[in-house]
Image (cartoon, rainbow, N blue to C red; front, side, top):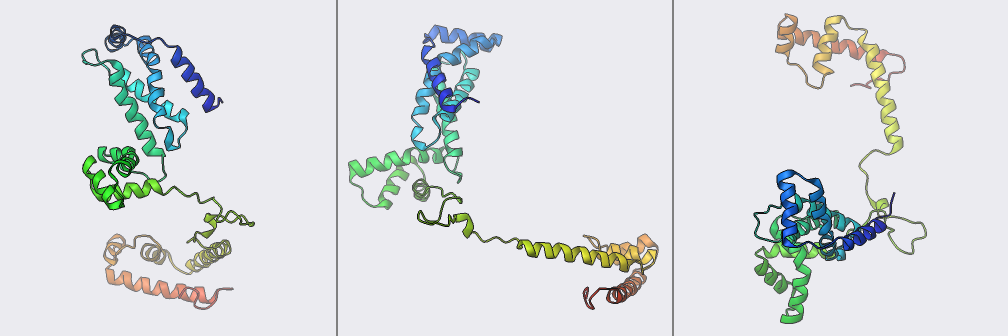
Amino acid sequence: MSDPGERHSRLAREAMKAPLLGREQEYELARRWSEQRDEQALHALIRAHMRLAIAIARRFRNYGLPMSDLVQEGHIGLMEAAARFETSHEVRFSTYATWWIRAAIQDYVLRNWSIVRGGTSSGQKALFFNLRRMRARLERTEGTTTREEIHQSIARNLGVNPVEVARMDARLNIPDLSLNAPLASDDENGAQRMDQLIASDPLPDEQASLEIDGERRRRWLRRALTALNEREIRIIKARRLSEESETLETLGARLGISKERVRQIESRAIEKLRIALTQGEGVPRGAFG
């Protein structure tokens, strides 16, 4: 498997070797693709503009994501632009492709910059990619000092709520913390944040005890059921051992007896089970109530 850095370097070298295209050449390649589905023309159009994708990807390198991944996303945006471009557009292909490349990279950054997902609306995207730059400019040129004033000014410029600005500002300034990171740099025991989480699951010995006790009770119940006749077993299973208990009316109609008769048989069967369970070998009295 090739190293991502080497792959990025190879793409950059190949992009620089690709010849620049004139307007007529761009249109001819686009026409051959849209009208004839000429894949060679499509690839030629993409290859000639790969340097544009790399240049745009470099603008996002400060978000801490691999440059090779940014270039790859830019490549995807470039392919989308090439597939959609039409000769009727009154713009150069590079101008048209710039929007698709930037959009693809921005979506990738928003998905992967943090484990906490941000909004994907146009306002949220503008806020995410412009907040730091606008805040620095306000602090430098206008002498704005309070955080509230900065948030209010940015909100007015971008047409968003100041609360959204405050939330995004906090998100950008608080990095994600790994649960596998050490609690302290000088901790000789190597304790991690994960160790401080409280688990709601039973402890291993409790889990084993529950499984053993559950199997023992199921064995006692199977043995006790042998004290019942076939109709009593059907009623007990339908009324007591099913996830959704049947009503007396439904069960009576199915068995051809009245609901009162079903109740009487159920009561008698429960008493027979209680006797069988409490008198069984090794079964503690009152184990099943």
